[in-house]
Image 1 (tube, helix red, strand yellow):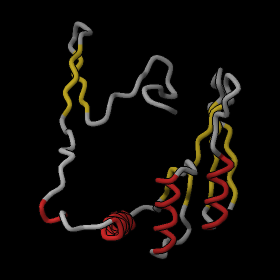
Image 2 (cartoon, helix red, strand yellow):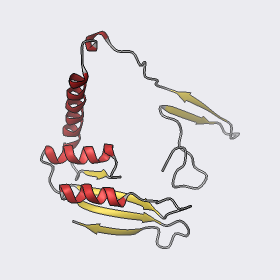
Image 3 (tube, rainbow, N blue to C red):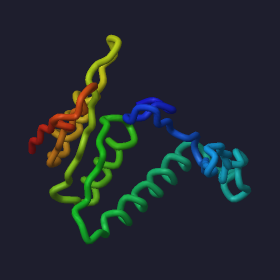
Length: 151
């Protein structure tokens, strides 16, 4: 769901790297705690596009490996977009077995599709994950979810 909207009526997302402090009287103030500098550090000055690609891929592989060390099963919220699909692919490349993937969809509204199940299904099938789809209804809450799972 596009920012600032959320699945909860009346609840909005904050901008990136923002903390909102709400006072007892209902007033609030936002504080941005981080802003990228957008400057290239000297040690990276000589890097070309291939070097950057390799460095980003290496950092992603390291991050994925670190998150595979867990006392509970590893799962991924799989939208079917670039980020989550890449993480599923990297987990598979690292040998992750029995990966659970989850996709959340919403009913179509105003002629616009509310889910990306088509894309998440493609990724889940390709990597043979234990895939679960959760459909959130537009109104009512009985049942709150309809779920479909498939390996």
